[in-house]
Length: 201
Image 1 (spheres, rainbow, N blue to C red):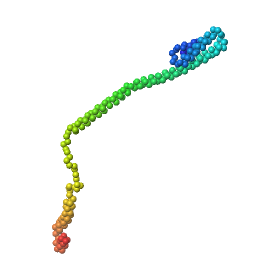
Image 2: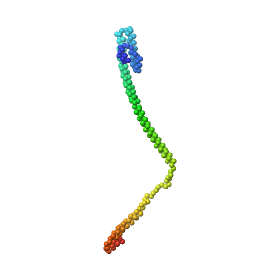
Image 3: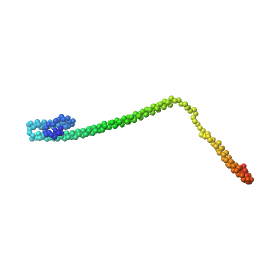
Image 4: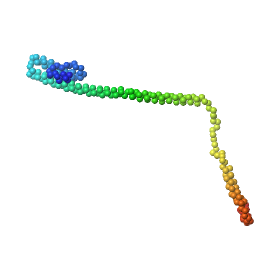
């Protein structure tokens, strides 16, 4: 339609049914064609210099320019929509190309889940078997009396240890003195009497 407006001279009828979805452009083309038909009908009884014909020609030119600008805007909007569609198409193609990798990842996760689930079911089964086995086995041991104690050690006995220490404390010095006197071979009557008196008293 834009090429047609560029190549066709002003004052010719424009095709109205060209498949555009913009209603305003269709309305503008219909108005343009009405002005052209009105001008052509007026030219049958008037000349080109008629003020009404001149005004109609000016309106036709203005409408033609408006239609051309509307078509250019419509073309830009269509290009933007087409670019958006192409971008979305590229995104969709990228997602489609990444589906095999995602599916592989999902399969890996699914296999790991199945392994974990099978291990969980196995452990659950083992626990139930052990519980059944424990419930089926009777108790062989019974507690009759609770353990008790009095806090006093059974062995060694304190009194016996003290008595033994006291006796050893007496016997060891006496044995040392006895051996000392036994090995002393000097004959000193006064000294012997003094030692015996120390031992006895």
